[in-house]
Structure formats: C-alpha cells, structure tokens
Amino acid sequence: MIISDKSPEKKRADFRKALNSGKLLQFPGAYNPMVAMLIQQTGFDGVYVSGAVMANSLGLPDIGMTTLTEVSQTASGIARVTDLPTIMDIDTGFGETMSVARTVKELTYLGLSGCHIEDQVNPKRCGHLDNKELVSISAMVQKVKAAADAKTDPNFLLIARTDARAAEGLDAAINRAKAYVDAGADMIFPEAMKDESDFEAFRKAIDVPLLANMTEFGKSRLLSKSELENLGYNLVIYPVTTQRLAMKAVEDGLNTIKKVGTQESILDNMQTRKRLYEVLHYEDYNAYDSSLYNFNL
Ligand SMILES: C[C@](O)(C(=O)O)[C@H](CC(=O)O)C(=O)O
Ligand SMILES: [Mg+2]
Image (tube, rainbow, N blue to C red; front, side, top):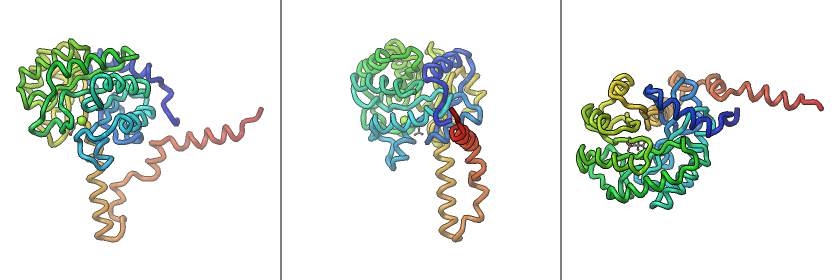
C-alpha cells in the first residue's frame, strides 16, 4: 500500500539475479504509476519509463526538451509503487559528463534500477527516425565512464544505447557498443535494428546482456518473446505501447461523446469503477484506516 515495501536495493539485486537467469525479461512502458501497478499485477518482470512518453505527456515531441527534474520525478513516482525493477530512458544524459554522473546518482537515490543513455547529439530524435546525428565515440565513452563511476549501488544497471546503425552501419555500431562496454556499460541497447540478422550480429559480437526495443511503427519488425529468446536477447521493452493503446481509446471515446452526446455505447471500452478499485487495493485502505481508527492504547 501507498508505496512498495520492497527497498530499491533489493529490487536492484533481484533484477541482477533475474538478468543472469538467461530468461528474457519483458518490460512494458508505464506512463503513470497506476500503469506500473497493472504491469506488476499482469505478471511482467519489470517496468520501463520511456523518454518519448514522458515528453509526449507534457505535450512535447521526443527531441530532448525535458529536464532531469521533470523526468526523475515522473520515473520515481512510477518506481516507488511497484516491487518490480524500473529502468528509464535518460536520452543523452541531461548534459555532459558531470551532469551525466549527477543523473545516475539522482536516479539511484530515487529508487530506479537502471537507465539507458544514448550516443546522439542533443537535440536528439526518436531512434526510429532518419537523419540522426551522433557524438564521437570518445565523447560517448566519457559519458558512459562518468555514469559507471557515479554508481552508488553496483547493481544499478547502466545501459548504453547506440543509434549508429542507420548513420554509420552495422560494424561501426558494434564497434561503438564494444567501446561502451569497455567504458563500464552493463548492457547494450542496439537501437533501430533493420532485421533479425542485425540483432544476431550484435549478439555474436557483444558479451554483456542485450536489450531489444519492440516499439511499434518503427524500423524493426515486432519480434515475439520466443523469437527474441532464440536470438539470445535478455530484456525487451515495449516503450510506448500502453500510451498508444490508451491514446487511441481516449481519442475514439472523445469522438463518440462529441458525435453521439453520451458515452453509453463505449462503456465496454472503459476500466470499470470496480476494476479501478481492485488495481489500487482500495479495500486495504479501508481496512487500514479502520484499524488506525480503532487503535487503543
Ligand atoms: C525507446 C525510445 O527511446 C523511448 O523514448 O521510448 C523511443 C521509442 C519510440 O519513439 O518509439 C525510441 O526508440 O527512440
Ligand atoms: Mg527515448
């Protein structure tokens, strides 16, 4: 109730164990804390907090305009309601090396279990768009090293993302990933893979765990859990999925009310009051409140 009883240290330690199990971990994106509760109740392994979704929720495109204060508040609000590990997108790190170090320290303190940092220049773009520009390998290596050195919990998972596939080709992307591992990255996120052979090439070349991004309407085909498992991937994110589902339902619903004048015909598309209260454990709050009220010295 209220916040998870599980400490951030324990969440991170259990996350590391799960990663070492060899099983593919599935992390859907949560656009708010209640979605994180649903993700846990549905039986997923962890929660992802997307940079795109946090920007979109503020009415902004995903071009690096959000601040560390905004996203760390949002992500920690999500992380604290679930027993699952929460990993988040820190775009290009919210500044240069020293600021990247600060970002990692703040997120660890706020209860996150890991984050990914990418090698694009700021302003950045969605990884699945064309014409991305990258910083030099050495500039990104410095950021990764700063992030690794800033860890206050060795189990905080530092994920380095490379956006180099489109701009520089597969071999260059793999070379960058290797340099990021040498600089202290615990996991690699190869962004915008063209096909399965790209995913495979990364798996062959890289010794640390790998993250697959199954975002819709992007450059990569939507691979299933078993396909990704067979490719040897360790974690998959569905970053924007819950936001896309909700936004379509919201837009359709608004159109119906505007056209028909009542929401009667779309009640089946809605979470009922009963279901809402179940998700939030409303009954437990009633019980807690009456136990406090009835407490006698
Ligand atoms: C993973 C990602 O960085 C995100 O912010 O969620 C995006 C997702 C998207 O825009 O579909 C990305 O792949 O760049
Ligand atoms: Mg992003």
